[in-house]
Length: 150
Image 1 (cartoon, rainbow, N blue to C red):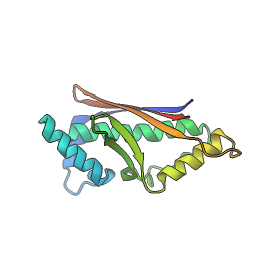
Image 2: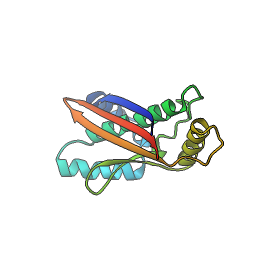
Image 3: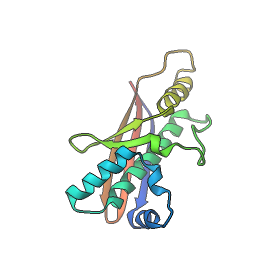
Image 4: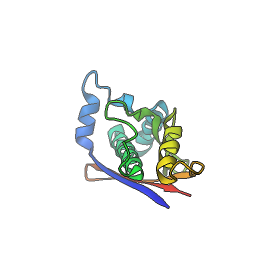
């Protein structure tokens, strides 16, 4: 059962400019694993890191949007000031396909909040699964994320 869907687009050039600002904390929005995978992917594809980071950023934004949609009218899981962006990881499988990994207390917070909303807090937490697709074209990075219960 689909609980929520999120979509986001990122202007790669603008994102790259933000990354290049001296003292920018943009890279802190990504985990060490994400940064390592992006560096390796950019080397393999002979392009810049910005396009791959922009795609992952779009996916992170989409995760939050899908989560909020799954909660309906309930309060969002985080505010703009306290969203743990680096703990919402967008990692690549061996075949290159993206997957969502929630670290820290984000995974348990997701299960509790969605379980309480979807099941009324009366049943065990649902088995949740993320589906993610990232694309880049013409200077735009885009991601669509679906949150489903099994």
